[in-house]
Length: 421
Ligand SMILES: *[C@@H]1O[C@H](CO)[C@@H](O)[C@H](O)[C@H]1NC(C)=O
Ligand SMILES: *[C@@H]1O[C@H](CO)[C@@H](O)[C@H](O)[C@H]1NC(C)=O
Image (cartoon, rainbow, N blue to C red; front, side):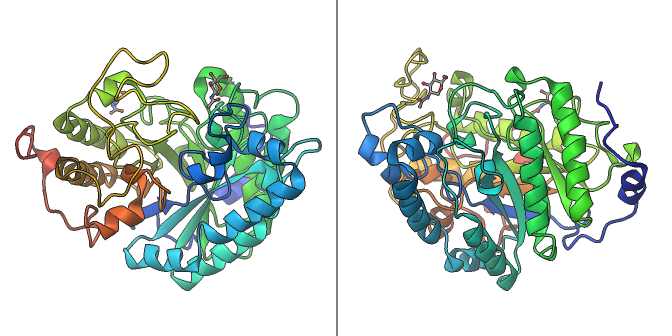
């Protein structure tokens, strides 16, 4: 059972008061973008950083990258990266595109470094500047604890690929300290920092869900202790957003200003990459009713334009793709060539890919606006075209303004509107 023991009566009473959030999550749509690959390295977003180890499987994530380089050299390289990957002008362009939120992934090692670990620090001054830039351009920030000690999902994007050890030892306790430190640092920036996410993508298959729920209560309490006017974001742990999560931490249970975050991709299984362009659209639309029937704020906090898993190293450094049958162990299918989608620019995609992608993006926007809104993954990639919002906007493959549609009502019909399909 989930215990409420950590919640004081005062916290519960305070929680039921209306909050004075700087963004109205009831009436305004979240339209945002993730600043991925910045404070948590992902080989597929910035393959150039991992190129020296192209054929060396001992370096696959930020943990092994910092291990291989050692503190001095890792600090030097990463400081260079933090100062260049996202700059003030990116915030300007994001605001000019009509977006109103950025979600910024950060690892616990920036907030609560643990002794004996290879990770390096120095991210926070860059995060401070990011918040200033966001303020200057009128953007709101969702801070997202993307990596937790021991790894909450075993993915490279948690900082450390491998096993799920988050619920062992002092890891959960240290995660709560990281959350407190994060809330404390930005408690005077609540005009910009409107939401704090307690943990990204906890993998239900490797976790005790009751302990995760207890962490959600405790983390919510820690954020509330310092920043009373921040929404608290919980991730769905890949479980059903309505049938599983309705009833948990909703207003009726006395816990206010909680956002449930769900991530909707259609490329991480054989069955999904096998879908036709029309099936991708239909599937995107099919999320709409579930999204609208959630009993707390619901944000699709990650999604992309990808209909394939072709992007170089998307499935892990050195790994291939399900789509063209090059992912080891998953090579039972071949659905098409990854040419142009493995590495490249949006402009260089084939005309067919561009057409399919434009319909898919609009269908997703239609479905994902059924509740609180959405946050695209990601703003920039070095070479993964289907994931690069900056390039998609430049190529006119993402609506401008964001509410305009070239292909209206895709979700209102069972017919496929894509020409030639
Ligand atoms: C990540 O860890 C898993 C499980 O230990 C392993 O199978 C996989 O090969 C690793 N990925 C990379 C890129 O090393
Ligand atoms: C929507 O919810 C139903 C009932 O819980 C579930 O069976 C279905 O898989 C969900 N669909 C999506 C797209 O999440």
